[in-house]
Image (tube, rainbow, N blue to C red; front, side):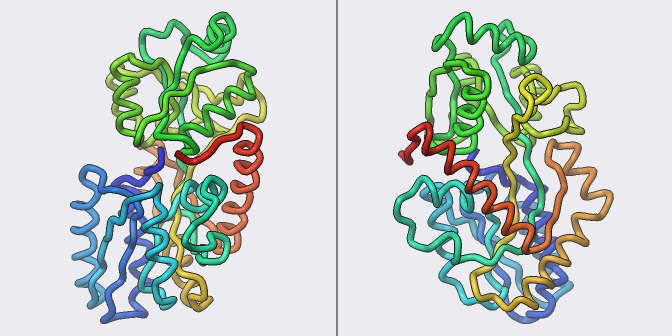
Length: 320
């Protein structure tokens, strides 16, 4: 989905920023989320910001800036002063995919931001409607090959992480599945729940409720290892060696932010995410707590750009 941010991820980002922001005491620190509010995310984040504000003697502001698959919010941060007080909660879509899909962005994605740290990886899960007879990946592949083009999968729109994961699966298994794009991940999952489509890919974090309720069946996860939240669900790679499709979220600052500020922010985020209770909460909900150095985060963004550039070119995928 194009918006993998949820309560824990925003909370982690803000908590990780607390120590670094203290150096800017008295100035507001704005965390721009380039997507629409999601459920209780804003409520919990604003409660946390009040606590942080008391501790730091400053205001921490959460600003949702949705639109254009994250481009509008990202552009706001790209144009912000490089003082460490305006930061972006970016994801694989805003940083690695949009620069490929959109021929013209209002900023140069490779030079407009200074990566700070990854917060968490978000393995995806291959979901099917309970009416689908296949119970595992081998069974699903057999069904798809027996009925080429008869089954359909929903996505949040052309070029989103849901779409790209499905295209990777089709290529790896040499199967044909009909793509049904929607305007957002919510409608895509809603029609899967209703049985109007038979398959979809979504983050484990966003799918747990539907999986636990039995309304959707988790066939496999898309990371290179099983997920703690779904220990009995195998990886696609256990059947299709080498298959991997993982989303992520992380914090970025405007380019030219002083390196000392970037390093301080990254250290604070690493210390926060390393706390056992935070890591366990993330893992329980299907995310994988993981931080990086700024250089490692930059390398991840570039590696995913390279991977998806090849896929998008081969499939002829364009932005809607």
